[in-house]
Length: 66
Image 1 (spheres, rainbow, N blue to C red):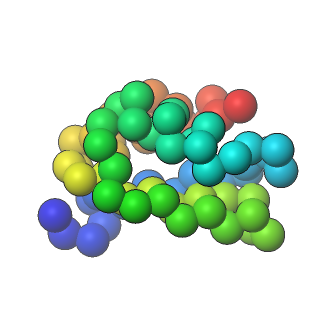
Image 2 (image 1 turned 135 degrees about the horizontal axis):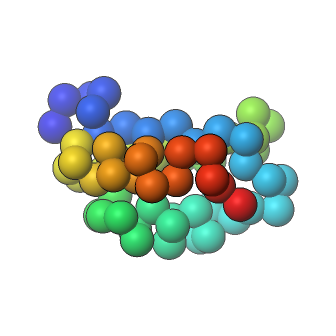
């Protein structure tokens, strides 16, 4: 998997969002390789195993995160 197509950036997270909550949301679309939480920036960077899952996540949750 090339670096870009598998990686999604989740921005504007609530300060109460946990990595476990986010991980379950991500894994509802497909298996992930890694998840990096950046609470100071209120965002997270996730890497899916397949580019199709990254695309599906972006389409499903774009601008709709809790």
